[in-house]
Length: 324
Image 1 (cartoon, helix red, strand yellow):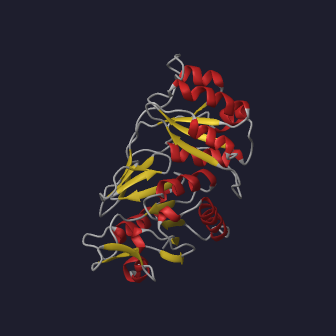
Image 2 (cartoon, one colour):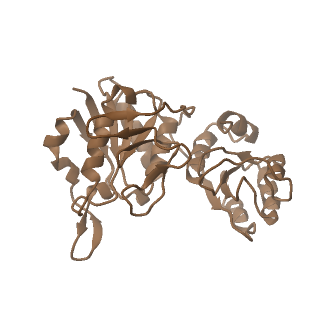
Image 3 (tube, rainbow, N blue to C red):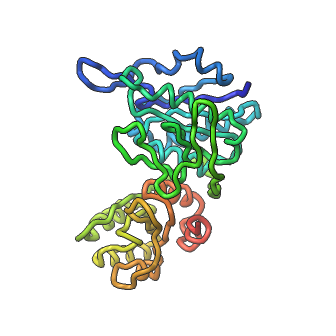
């Protein structure tokens, strides 16, 4: 029987609904720790609970703590896989960060719940068991960190939360899931491309995230500059375009060696240098803006944070960290 490291961090999957007040609250204990009989039929489990917090409270330092815990526990080579339970609001960010910074072939699976443990139709225990089943599969090796939710398997790079309450809240909008789960088997449909890893032991940089909109001015970018941020990610319009009033401030940021990374605020597609009008992608690329293909804003921010721990040179960032 496989040996699986289980890491609980909190989130709805560990919470209970207070029927009197109709609110979901953090309990004193994690209800998943009570389901021992069903779980131990799937694998030999070593359980750690380094965090017990809702995912909006998760910080970069928490992510680094999880990375260090996984590396430490797996150092002896007796762990066959890892399952992490996590709140759904920032799950995709922790998943992406760990996928970006952990260099291992063992299965690492993240899951959570959209309904609390005592709520009617709770999905927590089911998702947790599905995650363990996925972690013990030989076919799960070498695929990077995977998110298991509602009988689907997603890569950390592609998955995003698209619904506030639905049990099918997580989708890989561009590629679809890489696998599905039935009551009898785990089915992988294709093998994902692995993203290059970035080695880090700490994050000391600051990167802001800005969403573009019609009529946007440069004031928010100017504020980030005055606050001495080390980089900025902008969710641009369409293929990678911005109002012309923003372009001048971007030019100033780049002259101060503050990298500006561009993604699209659209759910699908990539940014590219198509338009040559003021603020268009073609003009922004000439200024030195870094185009990040395929990531959403929150994931591009994490990648820039990790990359900045190695270099602040904009050309190196573009060529070595944001070329794919």
